[in-house]
Length: 441
Image (cartoon, rainbow, N blue to C red):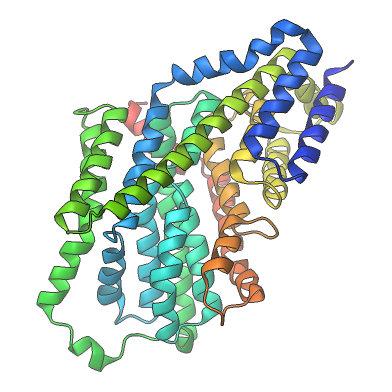
């Protein structure tokens, strides 16, 4: 039986099982283990156990629960909400200023959590009602919150990039550094769009009334600035200790979790409920993440044993005679199509064993490709019918925002994300400059 047929059979089986509503890690792990047992007999059942030992020996994985804990602690305690009040006051006098402040809020939340969930929760519950009350266009601000929260999977400490690093066998730190400039670039593109559109259409993003601005004293502004910068200080201290070599990656993650807890305590918001909710959420996310990695490694081992990667290279390079850039574009398009139906981790686990070796064979940088993949995940987060952020926004949005408003809101931001991918493909040094600077290359 040819590797091509077995690969197609495994993919078809996996897609059918996913349509039944089973958990992603269970489906992928079952298909991988069952295929190994079917192909190579009883001894192949050791593949999942060998995968678990690979995970236990990969120490950067310990950072995941610490970073998730840090983000949830700052979010659940309300410390992160102070950021929005700071942006609300400082950006209010500008047309579209509150929407610009929301983008700034999302960037900072991304730096604290590494996931899009926390940014969506804070944006939909804190920022959105205030924006609507101030007369902002509901379609525009809904898109701002959805697109802004998706930055959490690109700006460090991105949990998605940790998963990519595990599967692609790339340094986590270099991937995080590679995501910094593209993440800030996308935030700047979003902000430019908001600023220009609100200048052209002042009614969709009015500035704070002058009478209200006059009531806010400079002492209040400075006080809000101090409170809002507290979570920024937590992240800055953690990353500063790491980049200067004082702490290792794992130690920095632990420092971040500790500082977030201290920040909640100092502000008087560290309650038993906050601690319980934070711990429960951290445990749920971390366990899900670990199971997905175990399933991915088992699935990858079967691909390696089959020689499916070599078969794909032969198909694309020799039989279809495609060039490297054509193959790369097909890969990214496949991510966008799959992202309409699968989440980011499922996409990565399913195709990474095939794509990543092919990326290296084509002469592309695996870290650069990881950033392109992550941006396609961002597109998937806000693209119907599966987009996570669409579902979250529908669940948390007030009644006056309908489903069609949510769908229309993401159109300009999807176009801006595609523009970002094109820019990074034309100028890969935007991605690689910071990692190369850190490593001295």
